[in-house]
Length: 440
Image (cartoon, rainbow, N blue to C red):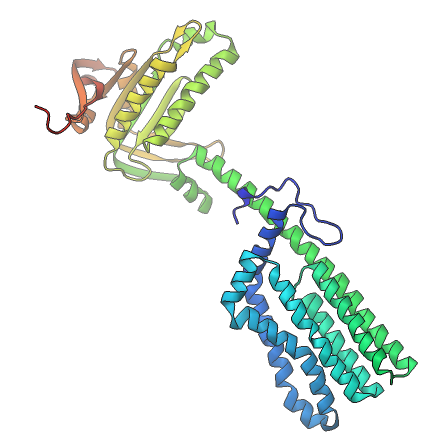
């Protein structure tokens, strides 16, 4: 079960029953317990059956006079184990239904079946009527008690009720028979009581540690998910996955991507006139909206530098229509600022630049790392923004070629771009609206 769906605020245990106070957590524990221990239960039960049945020929050869008594012990122990094995192994669909839909129902079924083993001890007692057979019976009871407390891995409260209930029933059989002397009865009671006390404490400790481990693993899983979310907020998901698997420098070449730079016009003078908290709140609201817009169009936010916002499409996974995705993001960012970029001193204006081409992308360093881009394409996109105009989206010839026909693009002319020289540049005005079919 997903750890994020569980409330771990109260993962404490009830002191007597050891059940989680939160019912959803209790149910999740049993589902996880069955999934984790099903094979252990199956193998353990089959192994137990194999040993109990396999030693029968050896017993018959070594202790021929005790063979019937030993078989009575085996019957007392094997019958309930066989029935449990049938539930968990021979009828797996029933086991899945009982454990998954109502995780604790199988315990009641098992308890009732194991209690039938008390009848087998009655057979030993009633048929034997000797102190020797009484001792065989108590030996059988001790084996069963250990199986109930530690072999079945029942919930503590059910194992407790089953163990002490079977003890009372067994003593009742012995007292009813009445042929054992006081010393034999004392020995039987002492051994049976010791088996219950030791099994009870062992079961309590195992159950408590198992539940505490489960709660700790859930808390650890939740923290891991929180760290993963934080890492994925910093880095693209594929890059975050690679970094977790192999924490080394990552560098990938991408032949064709689209890069966007957006900058708030005259932000520096504005920062001297607005109070710091108001300025940060305005910038945070604006860039948070940009994050949502980029995510909605499958565009990767790369970073923010002061009041500048950088995004790219076509990486880290290639995308067929990355230029159009960036163009739609740019148009929506501009529209958002026009509608919501108002403050008490006026309103914001964006200057946006877009260029397409090859880049190198990756993560370098070991502290405070970010996913970044390098190359001439990045520099040119930044120049498109810095040489643009407020409220306008400026694109290069390379971007215009990819967008022409689907977007409204106007020629601005040739502009002398710093570090690049004269370049033909264009204004991205909007997306073309297709005329409905049938109109003349």
